[in-house]
Length: 208
Picture: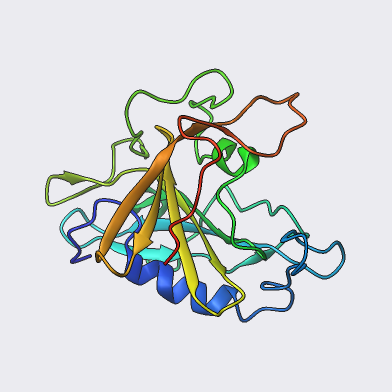
């Protein structure tokens, strides 16, 4: 796993973005409303995990699952061809947005553990997936995170990742690092709004 990042690295996201955004409907967005089109736009999702021994973990992803125009349900379990279950740790999920947009409440509510209820309160720490021991690489803990990829109308890609503590980050090519856009949480199971509660509202993407 040689990467200085303790969570989903940008190199992995770029590769996943290339694969997801080539699929039918993955970039179909109404140019006037900037919203997905029912029956044409499609979200795809996959599970991202690390596998291997402590000193030689590698980042891996499952095959994509097809959703609908505004949602996708990833697999909560992983079967790796090379390693037993005890050497596999699910880190989070990656999906595309047909329209370049920040994570929704549903996005922020989906985590690979039944021990975390995002509707009650966001976690005080970034939970580390246990199996039953946490995933570590050379004594560095791997942080739980999920991510999304999208493409603007001008062809530029948007890469976002978000944590169980609520931080939403966007990759900046200009700065060559992750930039924090704000901290968010799902509004609640009965809320009619698809957007989460954020400390800076509305949450805005970087212009680049």
